[in-house]
Structures are given as structure tokens and as C-alpha cells.
Length: 117
Image (tube, rainbow, N blue to C red; front, side, top):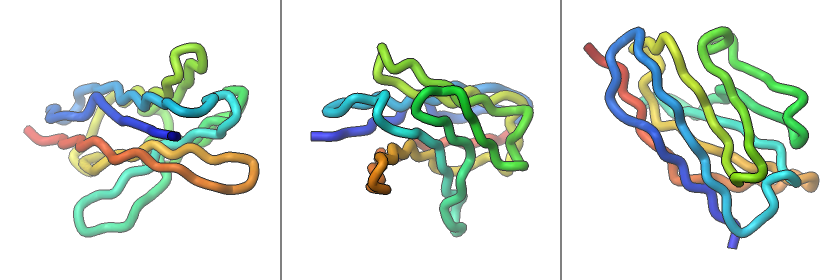
């Protein structure tokens, strides 16, 4: 059974850092493009960052470019989102998504990130 489990969220002050992890099980991570989305309170889900199957290509939302870094370690079946210089507006539930070649998407349950002083 394909499963994605996010972790690493929490409460952090503005300017702080967090690293989110997305652990995959039940499938070969190397077969999937991976991405991170977030859903701020009372707003829709938005793409934060994406990484290709090989890791050679990455994409970032304008709001996080230069502050967030997405990476993957297929040997550890894990995708990461390194977040630095966090801002209050980064507060959201962060979700991991796996996308296969057919366009089928799989989602994790999400992890809460709260940026507050």
C-alpha cells in the first residue's frame, strides 16, 4: 500500500528554520516526481516546491524561492523541504505529493507549520 507520511512541522519564530520530511513506503520513490504543497487557514492548497524523478529539476513558488529547498534521497525513501527565514505567512499545513507517469497523485496527511512570535 502506497503511503506518504510527513513530519518535522511545529512552532517556530519568524526568521527561524524547519526541515520537513516525507517518508514514502509501498512504492519505489524513484519512479515518482515529488512535490510539497501547503494549505493556509481558510485558503486553498498551493504548490510550494517540486522536484523531478531524477532530482535534476526543481521548481519553487515565488513566495518561497531563495528560502526553501526541496531535495530527495531515494535510498532513504524520503523527500525533504528545508525552510529557512520563515515568515508568518508561511503558516500552513504542509502536504507531500507523489505523482506517477499516468498522472495519478498520492498525498500524505500533512504536517502543521506555525510561524509566530
